[in-house]
Length: 135
Image 1 (cartoon, helix red, strand yellow):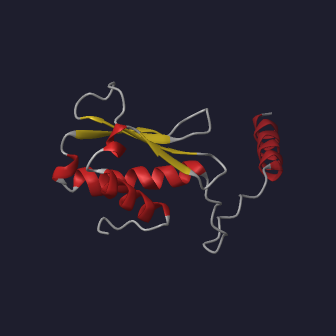
Image 2 (cartoon, rainbow, N blue to C red):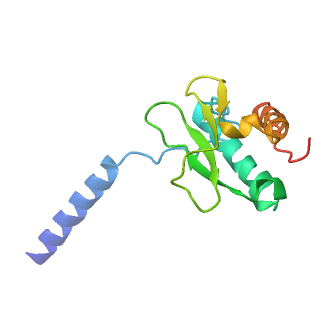
């Protein structure tokens, strides 16, 4: 009796194994690149701004902190520059993208001061695809 039960279980196991689909093929390395979305662009801009303005120790940005807000249900991923250590403070610069668009808007009081040319030059260069910190 035990032999019949063991054989029955083996047959059922083999039958179930045969029902399993073949594994999905691994993605090919030559797959087409993903379409650039507003979120992708803003993520690249935020990472580059953080690296070039903050991690580099640039004194022009010592008084500020970067606050990413990339997960946005409004379709407008963005990052902010705020006073250093005051992440909840009113933003001094907003860099905002739009899902499904190449458009990037910037606004805030930092654009009314001496830092404006630097901000505009860096952001324009990075929007075009460069990740260089130097103009």
